[in-house]
Image (tube, rainbow, N blue to C red; front, side, top):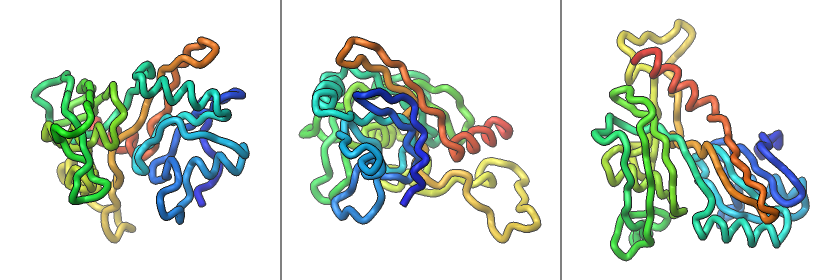
Length: 239
């Protein structure tokens, strides 16, 4: 069980916004063997409703409703695309176009369950990206997604040839080690082997902007977790 000291970004009588740690399921999976953020919240609040979800590996901002009315209202807002959703991600390589809108329909792979592909029979999917920092071997991007397809950013970045780092489904899945970009890297004396600095898909849900039932606008941000911050720090040092 994940320690229940969750980082709450905002909370009122109607909803709660959490900075989800990487590696934690948003909602229970089919087997239900693993802890999920929703279960942790259910234990605390007794009733909680899923509005949207993040992939297990993805960290960052996620909202749950506390009552059926708010659940219906916010779910509709997500479906009608009135919620602004921003992510930051570390991808492989240098992108020729520093800003771009990717429009490519996403469908489930009929052979491999749980894997998504770009296919005409898919649902429309729109992702904007902007390169924030270019480190040569890797780049830091800001994304805004206008649709909420499963694995959308991951599939779209694979499609343009710059998958997210450490992405097992859509990239090489290799953990990032400092030696992969730092010249003359040496292990410290007490290290048997080099530990990866980032070992999960490098994607963070950074910001949500939405309006609640009362007409209040929220613009909320979640701080990037330690693993991604550490990698960026090292990339900046060695750029």
